[in-house]
Figure 1 (cartoon, rainbow, N blue to C red):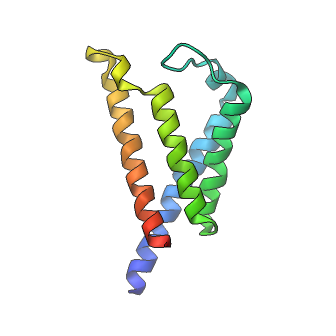
Figure 2 (cartoon, rainbow, N blue to C red):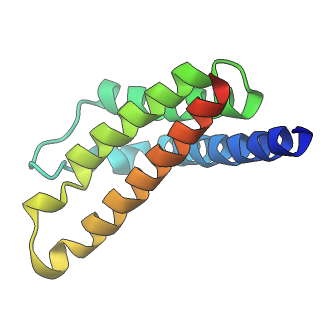
Length: 123
């Protein structure tokens, strides 16, 4: 039983570190990120984009610390769903243009699945 708890904590910390690093990198490249249009051709307002990056940082820290894990998981899953719909909507592309969006959609689905396992452990 202790081994399971240690492995779950390590996995939660790794997930948290992933999102913390992603959020920090997104903030560091904010000017460039702000210029990126969604798959629909419009840009997100800067405060909305900053809020998404703040969710990555805050939820990442929550997963690392083990405090507020369930709300952090929910926030990150919402973030992943929105980011996928806005920037990786594979249904808007065909042929080779679809490939990177398919890959990133699958990555985000996998991240969400891992987050669900973290949520299950925290219940």
